[in-house]
Length: 443
Image 1 (tube, rainbow, N blue to C red):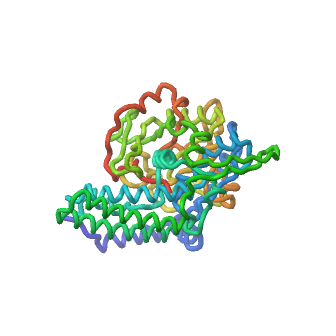
Image 2 (cartoon, one colour):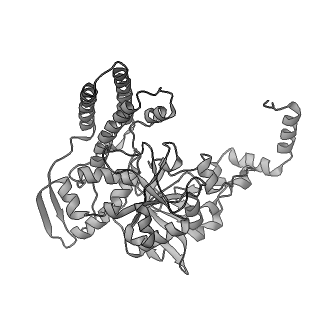
Image 3 (tube, one colour):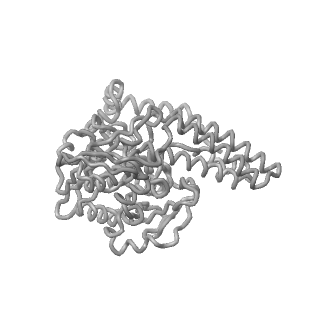
């Protein structure tokens, strides 16, 4: 039987609190200040200065505004560096709005297909509940980005710019999901009443027609062709007429997406290192590539990242930015805060337990643009974020290597920088359940 808290125990807790000078001091501090602010260790700032032995110059920082599109912004920030070099320009952006349009449209189709595939299960079945709760939203992962780019190509931001809705997506998501859940009920009822496959697809297509129209109203209709017009660093004017999104991708991105591997660091007992994993219901394009992760040790992941940085190429990565951070000054460092001392709580939790017990998982994607090495060992990492240039150090951040160990979970690495480990990515992946922490989305 559960045991209730007794009056005797309550008195002991009260006596302990009132007899503790540390708790009284913390009470005064917490009454007027944010907990992290009064737990900050100022002396640690010297260890996370913005100086790096490998520091790749990058284009101006971007801003995802009030959306969860970090995975799209960080991924396009990787591709645009290659495109800008080919064009010889000092500023360029790929349209994140164009990709977000097609991601939402494809995800609506994926949602409806999954609803039909699970119609024989009750709505409180864990898989059905997961599908319904996930719906269509902003977050994503690297391979989901690659799926959209492979199918729909890319366009410059100047060709398909932002709208209010594309940069303030809460209402778009809310009403789209409301309509999709209504349609889920319609489709499930049709199946239970014996509808044919032809009838179901006709109903689904009618819904997708409405979704397409709604998204066009919010984002504008995606372009099918465009002219690439720009002036290069040498002040020379260029124009390429009649490009399609696919032609632009083929010419300026090539096969980069197909030779990039998603590697993760998941030190949990259910996931062996050097095995590949996929997650049920984690994709966006029906018929596209599954999301597949190669699980590596942290030392192996870091070595691959450093190899790619050493070649002058930035790295997309996913981490949990909800811990030990000073966003105003652009610092993530677990050694810079002593919340345990200030709170009196034991807050030390391993990465393994953090994943298994729901404390931490990947929730934000950014770009690694530099690293500081001492005798070949990393001490801190330079990060390009997508929160605009007013946050952090003009949009850039630094994280300590110890923070990196605890809270970095995923990176997209080109095969050549994985060395012999690249062959492991070809294994048949092990299927994980939809709610596995490695299936969380960056937003």
